Length: 304
Image (cartoon, rainbow, N blue to C red):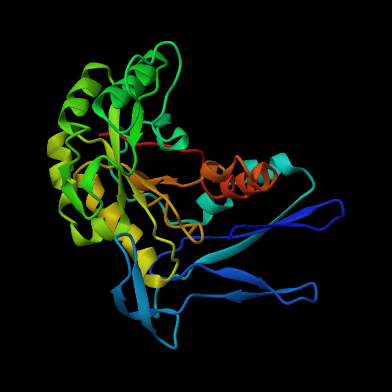
């Protein structure tokens, strides 16, 4: 979820959830008879290696979650609207979520991001007087562009590190430390891409990245919405307020309406209309964008 239903009448129905923690996301499955039923991922029990960015679930439980019986459970809600703009203005997710637990939020600074993946790090034009690609000159070009137009961050996607499994060894062609230094000079922060599996296997990397001067992470390829993965988001969020306090969650199989109020350091999920596919599915993307905005405001980056 969220799911937006066009009734082909004078109104639309939004179904979504809020205050999701220590529990799997809910999916809706059509019955084929003008109805829907809820479906939840089973709790994973055992895993095997699959690739550099995911694991294979080899055993599932016959239950969806093991949690405290005295806790509050996620809200599911409906919004009925005759006007699409009312859907965008809806704040039910925020109102139903638990209150913010961070004492100091003065360091939270929204900002746009320049992203090289969209054009495969291949800028072109009369001012590109170098060989473009995943290299130092290209990233300095992106930093210069961001600085010129007041964009406070750039994302360095896959390719900044020598290996996707090793977050501590930058690609020598990129020279990450020089780019961090150059970015500070131009008032542009660096956000680094990592797979969730690399983060999980190197959970102390937040401290190292903070020492390097990295402003945040773009964590990718979760592709699951079971209880374990929902708790992964929470663990990342709990780690960050004391360290670097910025993250973007990418490649979610569902958009968990996770406790965004509690962990304001992780406001951001992949919600730019699934921008990387927008070239071929622009119409679907426009509808998806509307749904996503109901639970997540636009890309918001945080700096401490």
